[in-house]
Image: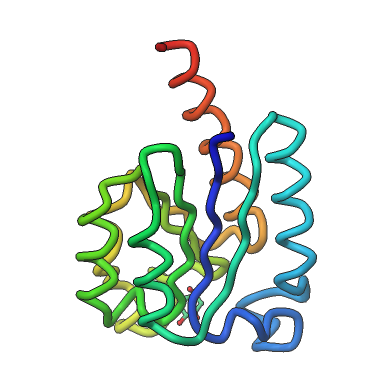
Length: 149
Ligand code: DQA
């Protein structure tokens, strides 16, 4: 079965209690539950993960195959990690970058994403809906691939 992988980077395990004015009050478990439900209803499987270790995220990305669609919130690695950018480019799977907060409306360092150029697009600033809309796109894209086969 084709899998929609939702990978979250550092500090996103703190959602719910972390700076709610930027990131809202939903926990990562609550967000993941809605995403899993959406994927399942569409006949796909959601694989939701979070890590605070950059090498772990890189290893996860290296396991992706053409069967996968990647939704990624790289957290602060968005702005710092050439290694993450190279990993996503290296596996050439369709990817969408998501952020809860609007990274273009905050501190200047957040407005630069090293990851965006290797993703199909970026959804930023819609809170948990950033993930929901990314999931909608992933489902639509995977279904369009099935029709094309
Ligand atoms: C974030 C934005 C990043 O700048 C920040 O470092 C995060 C969360 C977001 O979802 O809004 O950890 O990726």
